[in-house]
Image (tube, rainbow, N blue to C red; front, side, top):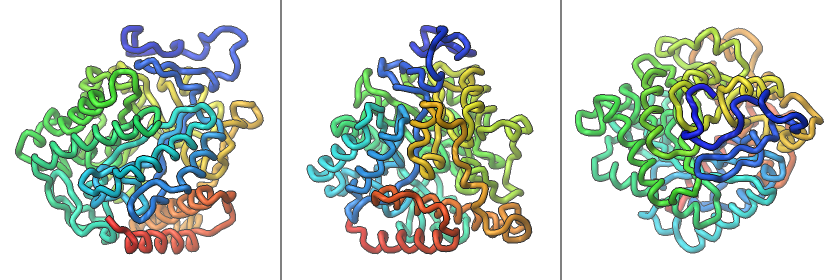
Length: 455
């Protein structure tokens, strides 16, 4: 593979075309990580926020049902939704948190619940990695009135976020320790790996961006200083879990925002991560202002346009992953946009990535990977194509009104959240439900959970 060597990691052959004759479905080919752990196949379930924690921010039976369903669905690796290290600064009120300052979240009962979640999510012999995160300034007003960030730069998005407070250096150091402690709890509970969430505008990601990190101390200014938080977290996590446990990082290939964390910045950070013994780098992109992960675009005046070659490819970030491959010395994971067997196999065969991520298709059809590997289907469901308030005009996803475009984005997200609620409740997806009813259910659930929160 371009940019890789046998000294870098003991992975699969460079291209699927080099597999031995008679090899089964190339997507079913196992993949060995640098730490020695083997993924059963090349498909992983991407992280999707679940929103089904209890009032103490602990895992519930809903997590068990949801991840048992996905485990039995055939993916070789499942990534959880973001598990928060700060119970007071959440991505949403239904997050699971592991916050040592809030004893209920790390109690014996909380750890027993994590263990049941881990057992349910690995029933089919797959890997289950906990994604560890801090929401930062992207914690909505009904969760916290004072979110935390590198600098007090407000997220101006439909009035849904308060002005953040800049974290102190003591808090930065504490958070580094909390990431490591959460990774330790994950391993003890039976999760088979962890991923540090350094993308999508959450706290770690916001440290990387000069738009949101305007600090003048050792944690801001130069890219080296802005990347220090991420690198120190990765080092602390690795020390905590040892060398035989998968540690991954999720990183934006680009924030797609003018003046933000750029693709060139990403390439440099990847080179620094080469020295940190990580087992996989997941390539993603965008923030709440520019939600490219779901194929949407925010304010045009702030946006960095996608390359023409990127628009022409099935997966949103595959073009960027190809460039990252040239400097990376670790396996690459890519999610966002994959819908066809041909697209997935082409990505692997071209060496742009080693493992293919699927998110929304596994909400619509949790059995898709199993059927794909059995060659019963070649294409994932494309429910997103019908999720819009109007096909064209001012109410459409391409409306000249930013608020209308964002409403379409949030409506589609709410639709998928409601399907996750159904799966977590042991029910089948309800594909005929509308966007307005989904928004109503989702917002109502968020506000109820925020009122009930006890930590």
